[in-house]
Length: 272
Ligand code: NAD
Image (spheres, rainbow, N blue to C red):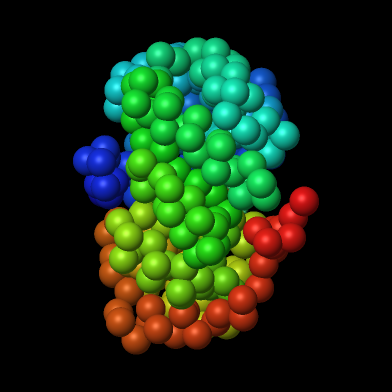
């Protein structure tokens, strides 16, 4: 069901489904989205300092009536704050904005060249000090992961990357599984751009589900955590109704075959 979780390599539980809030505006918009999601059963929220809505996320959580310990909060350090001391400071700012004692998962948002290894040391410090329950990275390719892992004390628990039927990340997914790094899908719905794809439409008819639900279910069956974004109650509910059916192996493969290595977002090797 909707609260089902994966267990990260340090034993922390992380829900398979979360609400993404990129571009949900600080104030009523993000507050309503988070409250709606918590009301319909979501227990994980994905924000970032860059999204500029951490205050609203925190406020909505406090007003939701759901216990803090039942909610998994992810936030991320933005590129211009990377480095050891500045990451510790950026974390403290995020923590204050969220108004929480601890964050469940803190991520390096992008692998900023020449900086991300120092940033990782700061995340290890925050983890050891108990301010974060788990630490991870985002937009890391295999070579970035190998570079960090070469002298890390702690292997990243999560790697959050662009992942959808047009970008299936086969090698990266395999690498992460081998090293017990949980892969997490951002832009899982391609912001709606995959909903009219004929294979997806056909499978939606076959399973009497929505295209969105077919795509998100495909994430789960690949062992990938997924964080679709919406600020509308009907869609927030729709995106969570993915725990009552199973795609056949051949249908999983049919979706895999839609891969075109197509990125909607930036290329992690050329973004700065
Ligand atoms: P998404 O694929 O989740 O698409 C969201 C958009 O799709 C919505 O704004 C809406 O227009 C549409 N949509 C959603 N549900 C729908 C439904 N049921 N029916 C019809 N339309 C629907 O894209 P996203 O928001 O870019 O990605 C999800 C989350 O991933 C973000 O909110 C953010 O939390 C995270 N993210 C992280 C990074 C990163 O660099 N780490 C980058 C981008 C996004």
